[in-house]
Image (cartoon, rainbow, N blue to C red; front, side, top):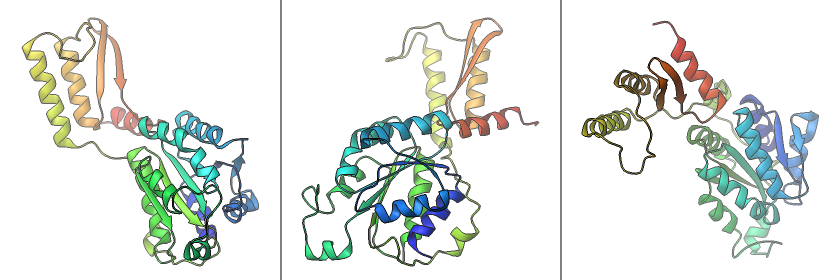
Length: 273
């Protein structure tokens, strides 16, 4: 199927309903694909930084993957500040950018708003994302999309796909693995060894008395509450703190990246043993 149609089908499969972006000459063909048949609710703003921050806010508020589509150069460069913030604060935003066609690249033509080289924008996004790919080979395009999207969700950080404008209509093979996949994206599981090490250090700090360096001074929970928090941390694979306002009374703090992850954690917490 054409790469543009594959992207629409893939994003629909993983549950994307909204797309944030601003069309431009090097991404207009892809934008038409996204808008065809009202596949997504497209949210446009007057300037790309606003698009980036809106997508960031959407991902935080809904716990879902946010998708952005902008043009090459003027659009991609304008997104840098917002994407850098999403990276540092671990927000899953997928940036899809247009790009110059093969003929422009082969002839070395200067593209408007181009930085030092045509590849410069891709290199910039390699510093701002957990995964960044240029889709310039029909044979591997589907796998590249799949790899980047899974990395975005697993790491809860932005990812980047750059699609040359003459690739949108190119027919690509789609591996059976992706065709038969149910669209479920997996979170990264905590490293059991690191969790055990954190538990060991916490216990060592408690046994030594006083507050550990770099922590705020506050009353410690009772030993029973602290041990329960450590047990829950091990069981759930994410940090759990139990803070007591009074003996036998207090609140539990569960550290999570999205509402979907929190739902999964709570289901495991209340599941019958």
